[in-house]
Length: 454
Image 1: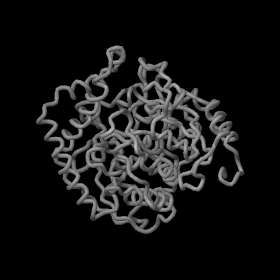
Image 2: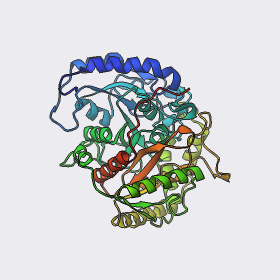
Image 3: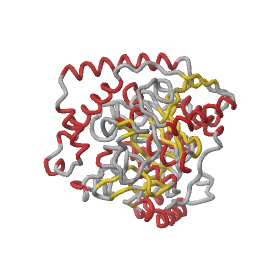
């Protein structure tokens, strides 16, 4: 409608802010707004209007870990409450050049550390499906804003499921692309590949549009690569046929899963099989995955936030400090071993994927918990060893570099949405989006925007 001139960007900005006024007091998803900046950008729209990712003046939201020029960017930490950057991050520049209008910054845990969205600057973000529950993290504000209809598209990032977990908890789509598809990693470590940025949306089709807007080579970002010849939207539009799905409810015993989550996803697999999919319960071996992921993660925290000035680090929450200290204690042998194991795991999982379209598993092993709970300590009575143990389903993609997506697969226990994680082949974003659209259609999705349920 924007492209055809049937609605105007200022009209959509007005619509978004009307909805923000209604929903924000209940969910706290987008605490920083920039209406006048968006209106000014709407009046100056230009660029490659024929590009498949041209957004034509569509309002979008940016996660508060990524800088937007002239807009407060706190990273969820008290030391940066007044930080207003002069320049935007690479992905923001690209989105704006392709017609996206930034209307606000979505809430995130401190520096994205953790899968429940809260911080000392803005407080808790609440799940629109039940405001007593967590929206997930670290892109929890983005997911909640989408689910409640505050915005049409939202940017996010992912190191341990931060695009996928909140998407699953809030009933939206979150795509973690392969490293380099979207230029620029969150933060300032140009050559690391474990944390990536990507699109969130209410439907697979919208996620493909946003990925087309984000993707492409940027000479300032060394891992970035050219966009594909065919738009991702084309792959989704052609989505048809049966899928060959490898399904594992616990990744071969690697990740803990609740009985209610496993039961729901087994019902989903039965439905997909009746719809024409070939479902085989199997999983590749995942030797050393847990230790390898933890070393790679800790290296990143120690190399970046471990170098922060005392005026900033004195505010860090306990779990963030623990990550940094673990990274500082790594030995050279730990790092060597992790690099070797990372290559072995890629060979194993990529080889396994040659026999399937996707590997399907939970996004997380349990349903959302209370918003005040930083992280769960047990699943079905089985204790979890630390604050990332419940996120083990997210480890495969950061270690191997394979793309992954969370797609809603109906409402589960207590009327809350459930997400299914699909892991794709190397650089297989188009095929992964195709599979996600087939599953979304089979499940009667997407889920529409909802009024927050208090």
